[in-house]
Every structure is written in structure tokens, then in C-alpha cells.
Length: 137
Image (cartoon, rainbow, N blue to C red; front, side, top):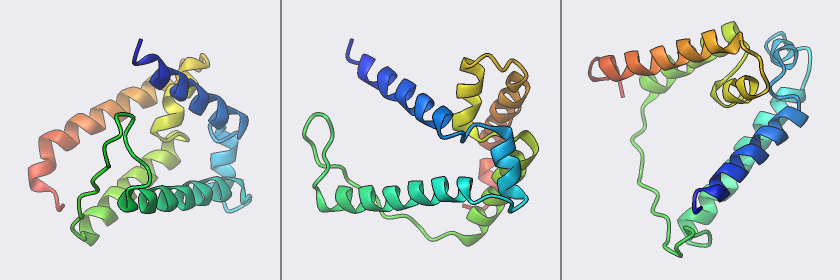
């Protein structure tokens, strides 16, 4: 029963992404062809919200559901790893027309063809795990 709230948040997230047309292949296509600002606005809004939430985490204003403060570990600055990861992620997103969140939403909406993309994403995750000791971090 405790996990029900997480399920409800996930369903709400899926509904919001669907209503915002973020899962639409045509919106993603428009973004990559620089024909529409829609997706850039959504992504920019998400980045801005993420920055605000991280600041609130670090100041101790937002706590866990148990009331504990959230500790944010300092990250190493890694240019090469971010560059390669971003290129691979962007190529996959451009080829598939979906990033990880919308893949599951599209599957839930009955778009059976997305199972091929989902399989590719899972295969990529397993490959990363197998090769991560050889990759720049």
C-alpha cells in the first residue's frame, strides 16, 4: 500500500507528458529539425525546475517522506563521459523518436512498435554495464 503513491505519481507523470504532447514522435521530429520551440520549452522548464529543487535539497528545505534531509554528494566534473553519453543518448532519441520516460508511456498507450525501441534501450543498458570499466567517467 505504501508504494501506491509512487504508482499514482507515475501515472500522473504519464498523463502530463501525454497531454503536453511530449511523447509525440512529430513533436520530437519538429524539435530536431528546429521547426518548433515546444519541446525546447518543456525541456528548459524541466531543467529550471530541477535546478530549483536541487537548491532546495541542498538547503535542507525539501526532505524525504520520512523527514530526513537529502544529502547531495558532490560530483566529479567529467567532460568526456558526458560528451559521449550525450551523443549516444541523443542519437538514440533521434533514431527512435522517444527517450526513456515516453517509451513506457507509449507502451502503456498500446503502441506495440515501441517494444523494439524498449528492447534496444534495455540492451544498451546491459552493454553499458558490461563495458563501463572501459569507458570514461
